[in-house]
Length: 80
Image (cartoon, rainbow, N blue to C red; front, side, top):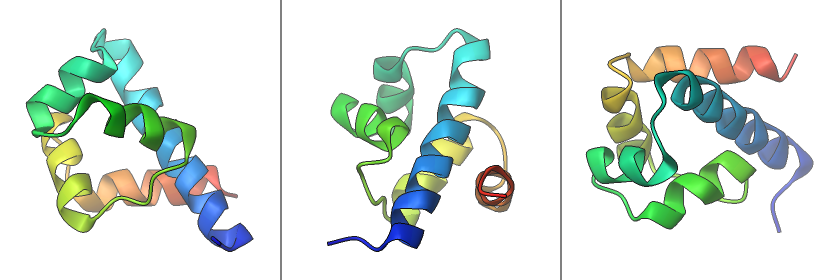
């Protein structure tokens, strides 16, 4: 079972992904397709129920045209 800290960062990461996706008018399915992921992955990520690999996060960051470090640091700020 995931620790509370793990659940907290996964939720923050999901919120950051949703925060970046929605203003672009991109659906979860379109983001998944662009990142080479299954459409359910984005939904699970945004709900904080999926622990992604580094490659998954790199693919999503590339779709947002941002460095992985920015995606992660913004998620960490959401935890504060």
